[in-house]
Image 1 (cartoon, protein in one colour):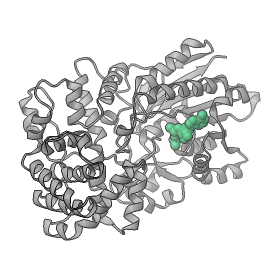
Image 2: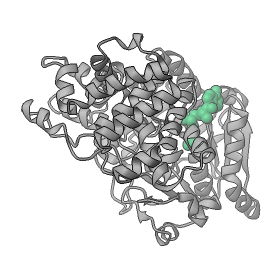
Image 3: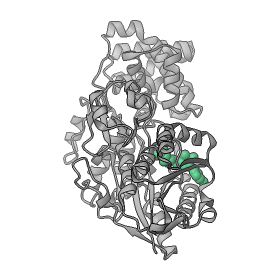
Image 4: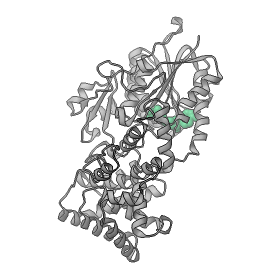
Length: 523
Ligand SMILES: C[S@@+](CC[C@H](N)C(=O)[O-])C[C@H]1O[C@@H](n2cnc3c(N)ncnc32)[C@H](O)[C@@H]1O
């Protein structure tokens, strides 16, 4: 869930931050941090070229928007559509920005569209609304000249929404283009609006997510009551920026130097990581061969921490047994497998979904070949992790529970995720998370360690799961995880809060919002 995927891996022309229309308003609201604004820095083509060539790109963007409205994932759908329509290079980057921006920022654009249309969103046809969102992003979030943005959007509407709708789209686009973003913000977020409601629009997140992130910043001690509003805004802003492409060199199979030689830069955060400024990671031989991979540095730190924590094991028991309980699609298992081989340990990777277990198998292939040479066991199996405690009590020394979660720490990667998630999801996930953690502890040998991780900082999925679990049982203690997160220079990673659990943040660490708790099974 936390792994990088999709079109942002390569070819992106930039993040959401850029030159600022919004400084003026921020300036007026003294005390608020000056923001970067949202305009894209690129204008891939001259306007004349754009109007001649943009139709296939905008049509592709619209096609993806509609598929996402039907339940598709933008990061899977977009590459398919780009391939089918043979859109490459800068045109693909333009289309990517158009789709990702229009989806991510719809919480900002929708009230502007409603105001410009003079009617509520419920009175605008969903297909037409998607066309308008694409147009609004070109006008307010990208450096597409206003006339080109309006003309092309009307042209698109004529083609996909019909002639009648095109007249309406024309009127709305002209209205939207009459004001810069800061003026629109003054209209749709009037002075005196409560902070969470204001940020929900300005930073385009559902208000319940804004509130949950505020609580998480305080609960994980990343903010004080004095700093929380500023920190929250930075966090939400980071969710709207395209993540960089982080790579992992799976130890023993590849090294970071190999990635640096291929054009990446050594990661300052993860000792096994590198960061690619641009280009397609699939062009790097180590990545193609599965010895390295695209992986968030936060995920790397979690796997490294589990491998680094000392375990007390019975020497007569033979090789250490490691378990990845929720392994699909295999990002962390790929790193754990390499680390297990280095440590002379065996790894079992479990996943409930057959398809995702197949992905884990694929990911682990290079490590599996090495394991066979070394006489070590590397097993991938399909099963419900909740039964592992009963099936294999006390068998493992190190267990990773990278639990299914809301993914609210990885919103940068999935533009539609924030709009799909509902507060109600937390109840079912919370139950599953507690059951998986309990089973993991049961499957852990005395002296062994369980790493409970989520790519969400939501307190209900992180600290509450851990505290409920430790309250209920006396055979487990929470370790201070902070010393086990070491950066490339071997120094403890900064800004990890007061412990004992660890929360990484997009705005502080540049990683996904990974949570980690290390629990020791008492002997
Ligand atoms: C957060 S993802 C794991 C990501 C993975 N560790 C990685 O780094 O690629 C959670 C996974 O748990 C799986 N899952 C959900 N319920 C499960 C269960 N009852 N037992 C085992 N796995 C489960 C999901 O299918 C999903 O693949």
